[in-house]
Image (cartoon, rainbow over all chains, first blue to last red; front, side, top):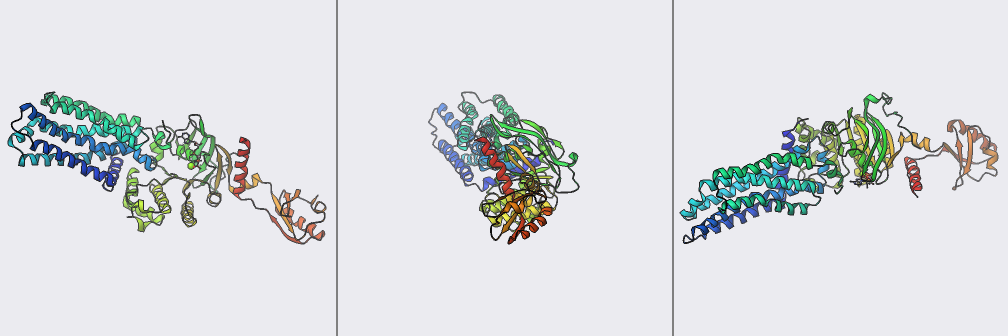
Length: 244
Length: 330
Ligand SMILES: Nc1ncnc2c1ncn2[C@@H]1O[C@H](COP(=O)(O)OP(=O)(O)OP(=O)(O)O)[C@@H](O)[C@H]1O
Ligand SMILES: [Mg+2]
């Protein structure tokens, strides 16, 4: 009775179907990215070249930061709901009566939150880059397209999302109220964004080595998370509704 | 008042032989903090048997089902499910061979009937997912509703989808927690029809219910649970065990001296007049006693309307046991 990707796939598929028909999820997924594309693009189009170079860099940093808040916020909506939401709907008990292992259930939930997050974030980032390349001042464009910035963005998107997803799922397994879970999860998703902010504003110089080093932390956490969260997963409490 | 499970199942081939029991439960107890859900419960269920769990609200029926379904760990005692001892590690292996239809259907309401079933078929890692889904939908008469979104189904239909879901994996033991609760008479009859069919196919079923006529009609044996197991047996055995055998004599007019008629008759141990005016005779064997009683009545010039066995339903048994508990608690 080992880990089964078939069962993980069953959870992922079911979740994705459910999201598509959930108006709240669809609205959040389409509305949030709009905010997060309009704000940074405005930031960059209103840059005046007469600005000091420090203020110029701040604007660039802020714009890119917006791009990383997206992978932190989007999955927190999904992951906060993942366990406690099913419990409130009464759908958790039937799932737990199948041979599924907690790890399979949780990995399924995590992937189901990660896939749409990556899709939305990368698409938005692509649109953002396209807009910059086409319409922004060449100086702004070359600052954005700087190799380090792009790398940080691409690398940190899944890491930030991963952090957000696993803290969200962890919170969701231990709380007994959907709203509490959602609020806590949004809070918990911010620390990695903070770390990236320091880099974007050049408080920490974003060298490639540093970025990789900083990525190591969340990477480790993301890799270990499913075991930790599985240990938090108390089948009996989740089924009987004993409030712990 | 408690009788030990006697192992006499509905199927003659089973003489309570332990090795081919689908469920063996020994001294099982579950406590939530200081609240006792159920205590010292022992029984066994043979393959192909339909076993009913009766009991008032809060008796521990759902918790017992959840324990045997490995969702809740017992505080003490042991159980063997389809030959596998219940333990923290054996959960997935047990769950692969049984299925549970919980108290509430718990369907994904935004998914269609077929999508709900598909998800579960994959959770059981079944092959031929489409074929399985078609078969269970046919079994519960829902083939035409396969692509309906579950949120748009009535309560009765949702219950049927949940039953279909429980049948997907061809479980060796099927646990049904109040499968007809909240259903109207027609929907209830439909579910009963489905359970009859399963029973005929030899599926082992553990059924909890508040509906006594349901238990009487569907179950080979029933257990009356009220935190502790109060009685286990076939419905007719329970009746016989709890109520000494009675014959009811109805006459057109009151007998002048009923004592002279009934006292000393063979097989008659005592008698009393019921509030309705009939006479209830306590007998050792109704068939042996009836002819003598009839002769004595004729000899006494009584106008006999009927001499019949008085019938007790499972409900009488149930109320007797549960009322006793209520009185004990006063
Ligand atoms: N998580 C829990 N924490 C504390 N007590 C619990 C918990 N779950 C159940 N109980 C208690 O255990 C007892 C048995 O509950 P259970 O749900 O098994 O009864 P039931 O026979 O299924 O009742 P019903 O007919 O109402 O469905 C009840 O007293 C209930 O309050
Ligand atoms: Mg119950």
